[in-house]
Image (cartoon, rainbow, N blue to C red; front, side):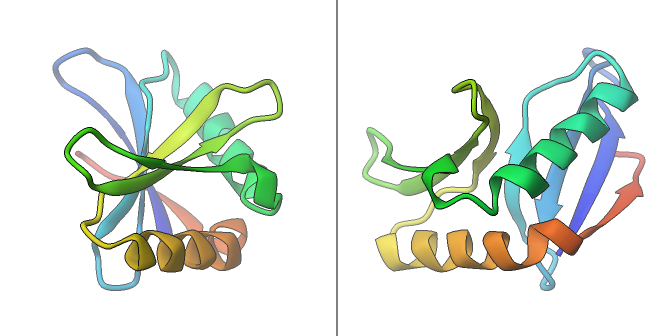
Length: 110
């Protein structure tokens, strides 16, 4: 897995996404005003992904499964992609727990 950091040309905010080894996006962040605060968001994912209680599994209105990683203060740090099958969601949570802590960070164009 790897984190990608980019700045949106539309709102000029910085975002990160976490990609698996196949290149699929598994998590996305909110927008951050600076690159430094975006990197802090990645560090929060790394830290909070090691605490099982910080994973908040959800079912969207359309029936798809996803999860959030939530900081100690209750703020959502990153939101996963959505899956039709709950098992895929759980498998991805396990993968994030194992890999996010050591995933490299790359700056990308978008």
